[in-house]
Every structure is written in structure tokens, then in C-alpha cells.
Length: 227
Image (spheres, rainbow, N blue to C red):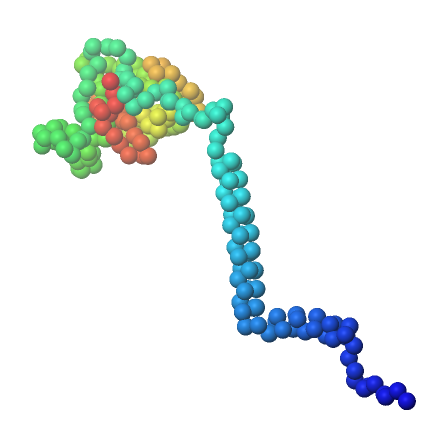
């Protein structure tokens, strides 16, 4: 009688199968497995991030670098620069400067002569006055090309014309009569815009022109700009 084989006998194939099944489990049990896996994943992620960042920088460089044929914009030079303002009077030797701009750095005598007395108060003169020796009127001309931005009749300063220029300056003409320009009109340097007249602020000056140069509503010394 053939002896009975043990019930829990394991065949060669089953033994090999069990060994194959144990290998992955044994690998996971290794202490170095998870740190090594983490490092591998981290290296892959950092590598992809570096590649992405490098690609973006190259794209930005290509976008911002102008082509060889690109024409860069050139700032337009104003037709009237700061040194192209002329006298606001036509060529007439009988018309002279009668009062100068009040300059805080000038001598005491010059500052005293550039004060205007009005309403029992002395006011610094913010422009230059012109008058004729015989006291008669004369033509007032635009000292530079520009656009008329104010035409006004002031009870103290008289009739006023203000012209804005491309260089950021404005020229103001006060104590006028017979104004010949209108709001938003474009004028060319030398155009007659009015005639000299009178005002209450400088009543003692008689018929004259008060001329100012301003920037950002600040009075500048016209002598620095009129050639």
C-alpha cells in the first residue's frame, strides 16, 4: 500500500510562486526604500520645474527682445522750445520796458522798483510791463505759436488773453484793448492778438501791456525765456 502523501505538501511551482510573492513585500520592508523613492520623485519634480522655468524665461526673452527691423518711437521735438519766445510787441523803438519782474535774488533797489501798489498794499510784479513813451496804444503780438485758452475781461486786471504753447509754457497778456482773438483759436508767433490798454491794478502805468510767462500756474521770470 502506497503511503499517503502529506496534506500540506508544497510543490516546487508553489514554492517558487510564494517566493515571487514575497519579494515585493520584502522590498517594501527595507528601511531605505521610501527615502529613496521620495528622493527620486523630488528629483523628477525639481527637474520638471527647472525645465518649465527655463522655457518661460526663453519665451519672455523672445517676447521682449525687439526685432532688428523694429523702429523705436522718437519723442517729437516741440516747434517752440524755451528759448524761442519773442517779445510780445511789434518792432517799435518807441515801445520800452517800464517795469520788470520781481526777482527775490535781485538787489534791494531792483526789488523795490518791481513792486506794484494797489489797495494800500505792495504786490510783487509777476511779469514785465511795456509802454510807449508818448502814452499811446500799440499792437500786442503772440510771443510764440500756440492755442488761445482764455479770453477774459477782469475788473481789476483788464482784458486778458492766455496762450498755451507746446513746450508746456503759457504766456499771459493783461491790460489789453481791442482783443482780436477768440477761445481755442490757434495763433502763430507774431500774430497781432490785441492792443495795449489800461487796468485798475496798475492804474498809474496808463496805457501799457503786462506780459507774463507761466508754467503749472507759477510765474516765471520772462527775461529767462524771451530772446
